[in-house]
Length: 270
Image 1 (tube, rainbow, N blue to C red):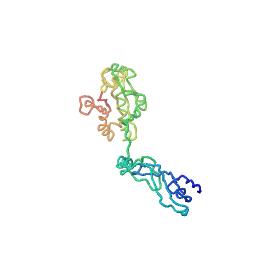
Image 2: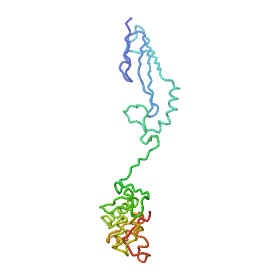
Image 3: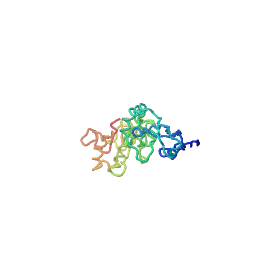
């Protein structure tokens, strides 16, 4: 009897070894291969299957014929396949089908999928200060005309300092003013020490408060240049200044209880 020819293990669905012609006589040929079972997009089961081909023949049979061939497939049971389909079928139907010619590699994620995670944290980005080096905080220390230096902040362009909170508010008003008119608000005076108030009273006795009683001595008053308290700029300041805590007080208006001083502006929020 001729020695049976050993069949080569299959390397895929169309491997040449599956259909090799056996020699005459009875022989069993076992071919092992891997076949993917796809259960919806993104879910695939790959089962190793053994194909057993039983051939029967006698000395007179043609060696190329396969008579009474029986094929047995071993793989995952239908129950396992059904369970996988029930588990993943609903999700698979909602996903996009992979293009032809591409391999299914695990679970695919739809394009509109979102990722859940921890709570988002807001990033606090501090805006640059309107007056570098000035924190805008005033403690109320000192007395009229004698405020400590750390209560005061310098203004732009070397103008006299004023109290820190008033300075930041005025700087914000000046930013809006500059955007409107293309140049900064012009000032002539700010904080006055007691000695400076004495000098001002001597020079302008009818327009200057008694030393120790002026809001200039508290660092919450400024005097603006002539171009700022007339015409369009005056109208703009009167309409917008109070939004920043600054105003020309009632007593300084025409017909007020005090002398008419349109140039005198105070930090009314103090």
